[in-house]
Image 1 (cartoon, rainbow, N blue to C red):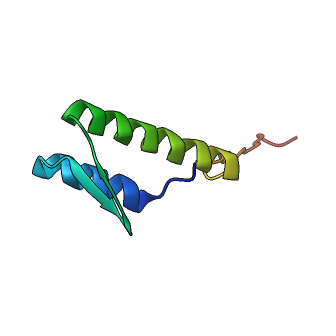
Image 2: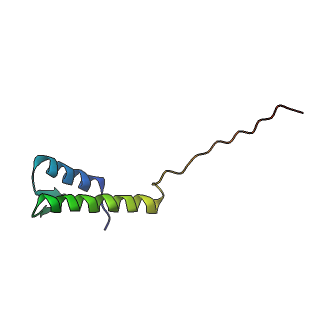
Length: 73
């Protein structure tokens, strides 16, 4: 399933407010416990990381600059 940053933000906001009901657009989910809400946040974070890795956005490519110097001949 494709996750969005908005979904993660909604979950984090609900946790911060002490709520167990989260609305994403036209869908509402009510979690049974705070622990279940945290597990959902973990799953969304993992999904976002997998999506970023698959598209090449994460990890950021390493940039290297190499300098060669000499004293001269």
